[in-house]
Length: 397
Image 1 (spheres, rainbow, N blue to C red):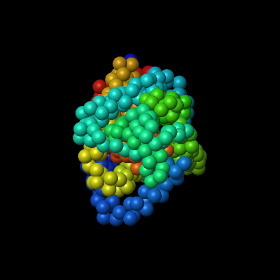
Image 2 (image 1 turned 90 degrees about the horizontal axis):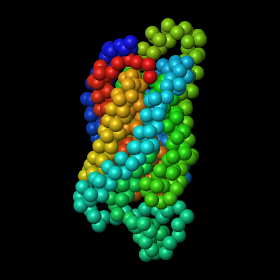
Image 3 (image 1 turned 135 degrees about the horizontal axis):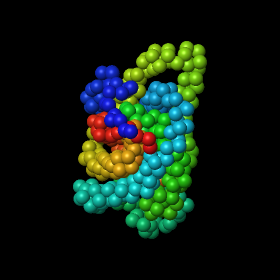
């Protein structure tokens, strides 16, 4: 027997932040850009507070703090006995693996190539070039041709001169092969999804990334086997997922053990209710204050890169959501399953682009644009999920 889901469930839009989230997001984006303009030194100082691996900034400390407070309220609410049960639910896990690794990398390549290589090529500049690092282990003479680039000297260092649009394309590809950031847990939570299953899907896809990231990246970028930034990947997962997970698990056990489950659910969780949203909005302010100068100095460039990334996000979400409906998944499982493919592991993408192409490359800029559109785009999809949940029925998946 099936039962129609009622929009009124155990997570009400109780706070003013959730009820007017779209407005708050717009205010935070504008506020972040204005903050970066008014106090640029503060924004640069905060942006510089990061943990780097091989010269590439992997973990922004201010963002990591915000993410911890975003993730902790979600983690502490998870009943881990339900996580074990959720791990036995294979259909949504299979769906995310297929979308993330069998579909998303190739649709990203095709979408970015279509827009950057054809539609926007004249706008970007067909003759515009970018200077990027030489591929690992390659030592060619000046003037030699390698792929779509040519070896040139820049400040007495050999670099590869490639078409600028191809550099942007490389950044988009790196985003396409790095799905499933820790932020998916936030999107799943806000869309009233199954938190336990979301955690399982994030863990499995993160482990899969260790195997397929280098293979797919090397194939799509045309540079052979892409070096996998193991340290960056493990560091970001440890800080963004494992740390709040451990804090939530142990504090849940301690609080319930000392205060009782009723006090935990009625008092403690009530206090935590707005924390995730406030931390999310603070993250937005920080991100746009850090990159406000880039946005204002290169608005059209940001736009050209944003369009294919946004279309890709909607496309992958749509494919996952429709597939979930066809597979007769419940709404609680369908929403986070679709969100995982749409979201990008931008920390790893930024680290890889910096390691491969350089911090000032077009590829690195494209991965940064991915960060900037991630939150607004995913919040839009959260809102879509909430509006369409009434079309689902509860069922055993």
